[in-house]
Image 1 (tube, rainbow, N blue to C red):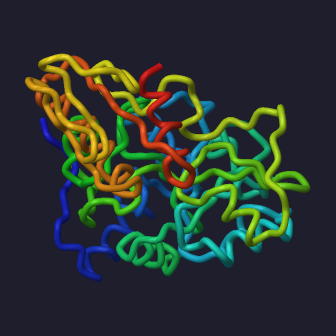
Image 2: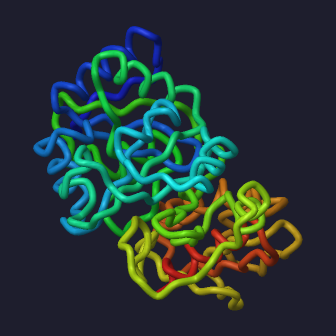
Length: 319
C-alpha cells in the first residue's frame, strides 16, 4: 500500500507544516540540487532511527546534517579550520559537505559512532525555505541521506522517491516535490579534520576549485572516515552496469550524444555534455529497470570536473 503524503504545491504554509511534521518526529523527503534527501530532525534519535529502517541502511553509516545557513555550522563543530570557513563562504549554499570534528550536539546516531560529523547547506530554493522554516521552530538541522533504499540508485525526482520508498513510509510522512535535481550526483565530501583538506567523495566541487579558494593543497591520507556513498558497491540499479563496452541488441546505452546507437540497442540517455550527463545518469539507470533491461552499457565521460564524480558513481554501480 502506498504511504507518505505527496505535496506537489509547496506553498509557504505547506513548508511550515512540513517543518512542524519534522519537529514532531516524522520523515520528510525533500529536493536538493544534488539528489532528493530523506530528512529527519537531526537531534531526534527515534526519527533518525526511522531513516535507517526505511532505507535499510547499516547503523554505522553516518548521515549528513543539512543546515539553513553556514552560520549554523558552529552548532555541530567546535573545531573549524580556516580553510573550511573559506570553503563554506565560497561554495555554500552548494553541493559540498564538510566533515568536521563533532560537537556535543552531534550524537552517535548521526555520526555512526565516529568523532566526526558531516554538514552542508544545499543550493535549492525549496530546500532552503524548508530548512529555514524548521530553524524558526527551534530545529538545529536535518539529517538527510538520499531518499532511496540503501545501495540503490539515488532519486533525482519526487516521483522516483515515491516509486522507491512509498511502501516503507508511514501515512504521516511527507514527500515534497521540487522538480528535478539540477546537479544530479551527490555532494563532494571534504574531510576538514586535519591541516589540509581531503576529498572523500568526488562531486561538483573539484580539487582545483578547493585549492583555488583555500590556497591549501588537497592531500591524500590513509586514515579512514566512513562517509555516505563510500562502499565499493553502491548507486546500483537491478540491471548489470558495464563500463565502456559494446552494447548488444536489447541492452541499454548511456553515452554522450556523439556516440551512435547500434541497431536493437535501447538508448537511455544522450547528454550533450558532462553536466547534462550527471543530471540524466540516475534517471536513465532507473529507466533501465523500469523497462526490464538486463544490462546497461555506459560510455564514461572523459576529463576533469563533474566527470570525475560520474566515473566514481559508475565504478561503484558496476562493481
